[in-house]
Length: 116
Image (cartoon, rainbow, N blue to C red; front, side, top):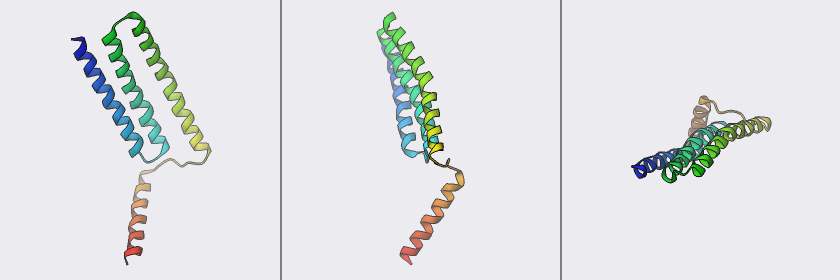
């Protein structure tokens, strides 16, 4: 039974880590990317660490897992805040939904110039 619970936790944790990686590649700007990395990545890592705690089950390992998860929960938001703050200070503009429309229109007009 412990193996099944550990396997499920590892699968869910791995899936969340993959989703975080896809979010890092697909999201349009640094602010949305840091959200994907911190929220989903922390959840995935926490689930994988919980699987380790369940499968090994000793009090030493459980204590280390709890401390590690707490460390992740405390440091990930602070790191994301610092990244966002630094990005704003160097002048990176947050993405807006109408930016996508402008980019598509520019690409259409550019392809019309090269083809026409």
